[in-house]
Length: 297
Image (cartoon, rainbow, N blue to C red; front, side):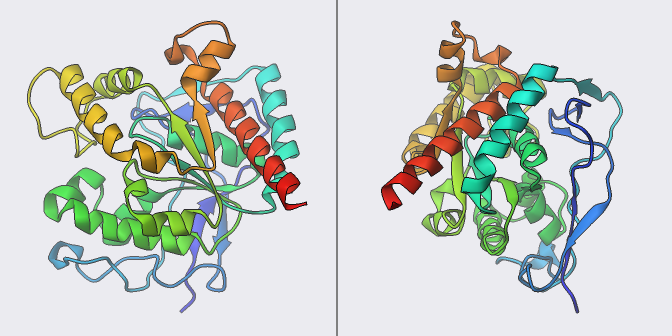
């Protein structure tokens, strides 16, 4: 049986805007699905018979159809200026020849904007977008990462996360938003290094405030503790970052929001727009790839 993945292909002119869901993600409107067939998609990227009775990674083949995101009540549109759109398009055209079809993997702490920025990058590069957390949820047949942690364990989630990243690594022209903890397993780096990795480095204070504002129910590593939401979020994020910072530093390119704010003459990272962050990501990608080309030549 042919294995395939349905993804959303960009069709709108840039500047029309993205829809912002209640959870803070941005996506374009409904567009026709593009299909990857079995010769491009390994068979293991899929769901099992009964994940609630399973203890290991899911392996039986089936069909995945991850989409950008669904419209929900209370959505709002975010529009980008013509100048921002032009800069993004021009920089994407500069980067594309160097990328040569390689996938881009975004890494970083939870709440760092990997999904939001990833969708913008996919749009301007003409790539397809995937969220590895969503693919794991689809693969195991459970609707949220938090529920997977609750019903099984973090190890169960990580095993399936590695399977998803392995399968994606054989594909091309994808932007992939990874889970915050994907970097902790060396095997995942072996998959992601087949493409190009970009670390979105956001100050912990800004992350804690952002996560506190939307709630921690969808963040299983933050939701177990009681107390002041901001204080517990900041403390846990600090602990997680200390464990992961060396792993994040393995990324090919680092996008520091503090650095972007400094270049703009201020220190408030919270006012940086997703398009500005995406533009910086393209600049860092271009810098890494051009330097690599020069060394090789």
